[in-house]
Amino acid sequence: MMAEEVKLFRSWSSPFPLRVIWALELKGIPYEVILVDLSNKSSLLLQYNPIHMKVPVLVHNGKSIAESLVILEYVEETWKQTPSLLPEDPYERAMERFWAKFGDDKVLPSLWNVFIKQGKDQEEAMVPAQENLTNLEELLRGKNFFSGERIGFLDLAFGWLANMVSVFEEVMGATVLDNQKLPSLSAWMKNFMDAPIIKESWPPRDKLITKCQALRQAHIEKEAPK
Amino acid sequence: MAKNDDVKVLGAWPSPFVMRARIALNLKSIDYEFLEETIGSKSQLLLQSNPVHKKVPVLIHGDKPICESLIIVQYIDEVWTSAPSILPSDPYDRAIQRFWAAYVDDKLFASMRQIKSLEGEEKKAMVEQATEGIVLLEEAFEKCSKGKPFFGGDRIGYLDIAFGSILGWLRATEKMGEVKLLDEAKTPRLVKWAGRFCADGAVKDCMPETDKLIELAKVLMAKMKGAPPKQ
Image (cartoon, rainbow over all chains, first blue to last red; front, side, top):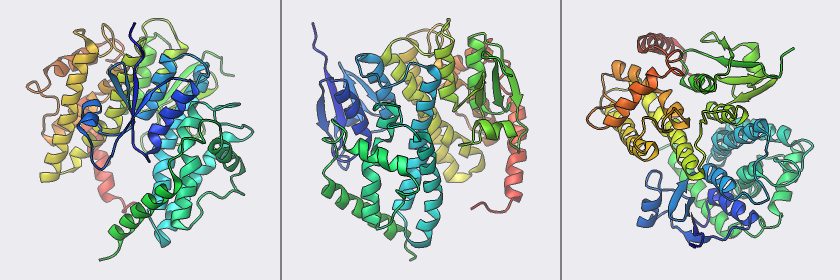
């Protein structure tokens, strides 16, 4: 009988492969990591994700799946052992999918937009970013995790926030997430950051800070009046 | 007071995203009330049921609003479990269809809708981008259909709905831009598939007419040209 072969393509810093790692770890699924240098994309990545040439890519018994949220649903449907990542109720599932999409389509780009700017431009960018974060605060109210009592799909989808907000704030020397105004979200970030399995997975912080400093610098220089 | 099995769709006739919800309900033979938004304004009901995005479609099932077209389609598939299934049963096949549906929204439709307002080299580049995307979908069709008429096999499925719903605007773009996007020579299978999709019983009553879409596009483009620059 063929052993299950699970490979995950990731880079050292990208938060999206982490979603898949968390899911695999939570479900106790053995997997092999293939580290990719995104600045020098290998032919292996081209072979397994020819459309987007991005990480993560999950390869399960030779079949490859790309797009982190698609992969999460695949993991949930393939390995049905606990913990289950999505709720049973179709409406609750639709809500988690809706907010996960909101996270990727709105929250992330709006925070990135704050991160790569300065001065007046950054002030303006803060408004939609903080509105988006307020939506998350309201979503959480009364709950320990986005998915309820324990970590689920939506927590994995938002997990990047727990790490990246503090990294962004340190690099840009400005606060985007006000702990006083968003107490539930702040508490969730702390809980998620330090949760078992999650806490071992974060990329080395100093390396991440250095990388983000370079990215911010590059963007600011590009926008500078000539 | 809404019954628990009351189904409403908040929508607009030109929207491919609204079409998706309607096709899914049609496939499952679910009766629903179609509440049409006036183009250019947003009803109170819309603002209340989709406060985050303020967009159609919204599916209102009993008193619960569900937003985002592909999420609505999955919801419909999961609530009304009688045949036909919209997503396939195999997790890998599901993942492939989800991947390509996301591609249609994030890449293909986004590049396609720009074509009508571009000219010269920019237009050429965008047309090339869109055409390349459609060629990729031709390959995906070969793999997903396994020789059958639809991405979903014998019947329309998730990816058929995701991609097929943009055919109205695709044809409108071809006419307005005087370009060929769905090409017999490059993507013969998809050309045939498009015909089958549009003729399907679950689709034909909600597919907008190409000429009406063109009329609307011209009106909207004229409005935009006359409008003050947006910030």
